[in-house]
Length: 276
Ligand SMILES: Cc1cc2nc3c(=O)[nH]c(=O)nc-3n(C[C@H](O)[C@H](O)[C@H](O)COP(=O)(O)OP(=O)(O)OC[C@H]3O[C@@H](n4cnc5c(N)ncnc54)[C@H](O)[C@@H]3O)c2cc1C
Image 1 (spheres, helix red, strand yellow):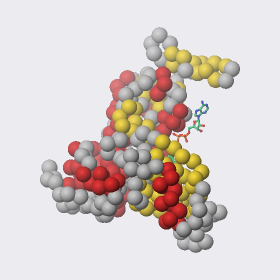
Image 2 (tube, helix red, strand yellow):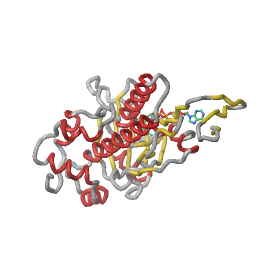
Image 3 (cartoon, protein in one colour):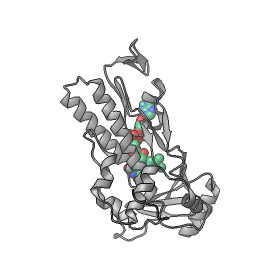
Image 4 (cartoon, protein in one colour):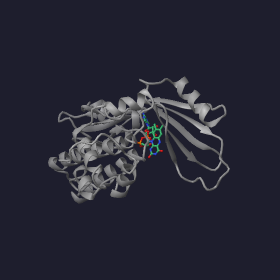
């Protein structure tokens, strides 16, 4: 990526050629080749709130039941497992905290749970969080290029689609001429949306489990203020639209509706704190 003297991208370096551009969308995933490497915006980690930082994917034997068409997520000793039934196999993965377990321990637990040998397909370490600025000058990062969260509730896909919808809305309604304050509004709404993703995912961990060091650490962990207050409210009444509104703004829509928060919060438990 080549920048001009105003700090705007003016060309992309491709294999053997340069392509002149007047706007760039960085969708390079975890490679983060555009915004992340050219501008190095600050990284806001969710590491103290969302406990997982490693995933192992594997295939399971098909169940043989055509009724199991839903993705299943199951709490495990140091994280959780997803199972996605497809025609010929069930794609699965264990997302866990490397502070509490290693790959070998996790695969042993998987084999014990399913009762047969399971071959790991892919291993991945990650830091959950986001770039505090997703749009700088004429470069905007979307999807994993702008942040990452564990694959719980397809939150990353939902966030990416909302980024894309708002980018299109801003570019189309401005006729391709975008004022700086619209860019700032995009970035601040993006941050609010990430905060909503963080709190929604954190709610999944409050099911009352405390039988392993992983779950006990979560029970005693300090919570972000917004999440602690929300959880205190949910202990007194069901989630309402007014609870979710603060996570959106500047034309952005909630990634998760009241019914989504309700269905996760139904199982959530935790020490009662004042609802202010
Ligand atoms: C283990 C795991 C499981 C997941 N499961 C789910 C799920 O069930 N549901 C869900 O919604 N999300 C899931 N996700 C998140 C999922 O990755 C994202 O929702 C989605 O793939 C992000 O899309 P993206 O376009 O931002 O990045 P990516 O899909 O990673 O796309 C980035 C692209 O950029 C390309 N690229 C990078 N560098 C270069 C280069 N130098 N030159 C050319 N091309 C380049 C890459 O090849 C890639 O094709 C999962 C993620 C992981 C890690």
